[in-house]
Length: 311
Ligand code: SF4
Image (cartoon, rainbow, N blue to C red):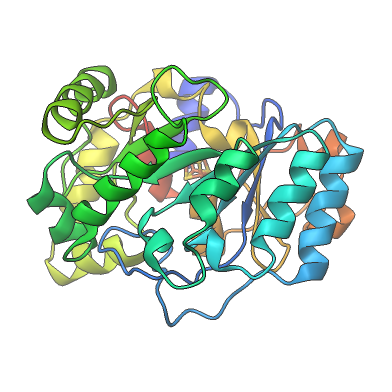
């Protein structure tokens, strides 16, 4: 069944926004890595990058509206030349700032100082660590990634990023390494906590589990291996109506590198714009209008509603 029809059947309505609690800002698709599961298909060769005038329009929206969280993503968002300016200015506006970091960026020339920058500005870090064992991580993200990630987490721990510190949060993200759904978040978080403490003496705040979305580089992999249809069926068969209230599209708005607005980062990658009746660009942002919008959906949305959800 089409996802749109499934929603009509369950909600007796379309999928609508509940509130805009957070602005998710994709500042560009360039990345120092090229992970197999990346829904953005980010990599060193990508050239899309948010320019300073769009960064300023994002800051203007934060200044004028009651949106108190800025969630910065990419690519490796740190590679945008205006990244530290954006973080510093958003903090001055009193916003809570979250950065989706791949952690390995701190090993690249010119980015070594960022852990201290994050510490100084109380930036919350959400970092991909697809498993607590080396082999699974390196297979998905490239040789040496696990070792580098552990080294950086140790450094962040020493800067105060550790379990229980509400000012300096470090969250990890699990992705399945194949075409199966993420396990139950709480029990996997306990496994991560126990194993990472025992093997590497590191801590973190929370673990988030996400199923792989059937888009971007992961979709290419599904196409190549002839498993796209089977995976989509798994997602559809695992539809869980209890996930609907917390869907991220109902609580945030996503800004693309060129300033266009989307319901989420996934729709952005697919070029599925916010619905036609809404203002389409950050320069004409209208909070009242956007917070009551109908969300643009497609069958990839089953990736967010499968099992315990991916939000
Ligand atoms: S992909 Fe997920 S977050 Fe995006 S619109 Fe669909 S359900 Fe919402």
